[in-house]
Length: 275
Image (tube, rainbow, N blue to C red; front, side, top):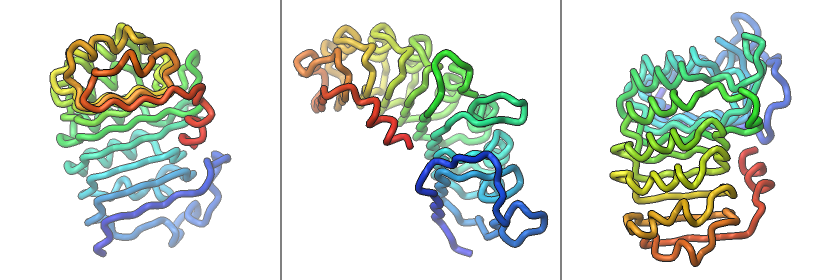
């Protein structure tokens, strides 16, 4: 009755889209109907479930949830997130790692769309940390259910202080322009966001609150992108990992603390971490 933290994960990514466990039976006692009134921290990782069945049912029952992490939870859809947002005003941290799956409209894409982002922006006034990682989404196919406009709307509507975008090929310099105006954004991490150029990173130097910046596996970026940070000297910390065209010498003095690693390519490591 007093459960506050629940973490369930499988070892590997699910390799099936059909859930045939005991909770798929109507009236089954395995429908995870335990009390969630005090649940504050929920993590579901690498599971396969279906609507109204299995662990995704928890999302519809949580009313005190503060931290939500969904890591490749196949079968979780917009209606689950919308119901959660409508019943919960306490969400502070949201972490989503998504991979394409076959959806109801016979489209192969991530199951969550802008409708989830709109619900969070409308009903949840306190999200301060937001992580969004995409794995297996090709840059030239619409396999990501979100749009850049949806992400910008969320960032502008919520007091997000800590933002991580990984594999977000939908995010480009126009999105970076919106980030540069985010009043609350203090920490930003960009990993393998291939549509971002030096011009987009250059805009971030105007950000009113940004003090921590991490760029990882962004081989399209060069010294010119971070040059403005070197001149402004506003950052507390700057981390450059596996960006082959940005040298340590180029970013010296850009922040009080500078961390730089240049061993690349690091794509294999990024894939292993995502999985």
